[in-house]
Length: 421
Ligand SMILES: Nc1ncnc2c1ncn2[C@@H]1O[C@H](COP(=O)(O)OP(=O)(O)O)[C@@H](O)[C@H]1O
Ligand SMILES: [Mg+2]
Image (tube, rainbow, N blue to C red; front, side, top):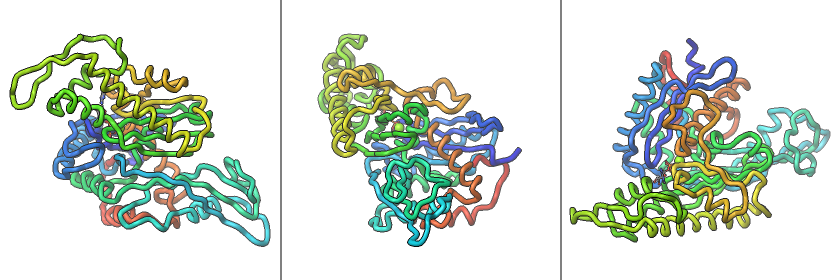
């Protein structure tokens, strides 16, 4: 069996650490053949805050995925989340003074290289450089310039950066399990891969991935990501509101939110909820209506921030035609889609992961869009890199320091059999 047909992904999430092993069939179907889940430890608001605890959780998830798949996991595509992730746009150009250049893959790469942000501070790393549109001799709106001729090719790219320390922590957490990171992918971007349909991405859609401590907003149009922003509000803030309002331990507040939480007044369920108080002072009862009120206020704040970002940071004049798709663990909050639908007067749906076969029933919920998306992302990167005869599709481009660091370790690695890449 060729090891190149196996791919693995890892999402070090706020609630759970999840690993998947997929097998790519000849007909292009990516089948999940193994999965591992471990309660997340050492992770807060989507960022590793205790490396030893996170390493143990990662090991548990990877070992289970490896065992259920029956293959050793040697390489993974890992997600990177948190509110330290930022995005901005840059232009790169390639020109010829004498004659019209035929636009080849190499010309495109040179243009993207020219957009590379070389002025990042040392504590930031570039995660992604994603072309979003081209211009030929000043003519904008070119979607695929390959094969055309021009004296000047321009490309607008979305640059996604992350703080170096949490990025390295992800790599360290993986390497502790004698596994290597092949690709790193921003969580919001990974979620987009598994949450959105091709049609939605084509006509225009806004993805709202509500994670532990942040919410990623990603706008897609004409099949590509055009804008991305990370808001520093996520599921953690919903829980914290309840903990503070009702003076209860954080874990109890989280449990109340997940079991009884919702944002609609008529969401059903009991009128009062019994909760454990601090310091073994017995139990107290809280009104579910009140819980709903706090969660609804926080949800409306997320909605307002998202709308403001869409209009003012992204500069979009209106809601995209396909509306909003909700993903991430926070999207499971009861009634969130209905509330957003009302507030935005646009289509809103909650995503469940798509694009793979054989995903266990328990993982068909919005919290798992990131890991499934990472599996899809890594598989696609590996295939396109291989098809064009280059590692990571990054020929000639200056590598971010963290990737150079990774690559140096990769070179030192010995090949094993059979390993999921
Ligand atoms: N059923 C649920 N209802 C409401 N919130 C939920 C539910 N399940 C998970 N969450 C919330 O989702 C958040 C974690 O989302 P997740 O996508 O796993 O995080 P991240 O991607 O940042 O690691 C947590 O704040 C958690 O409370
Ligand atoms: Mg998530």
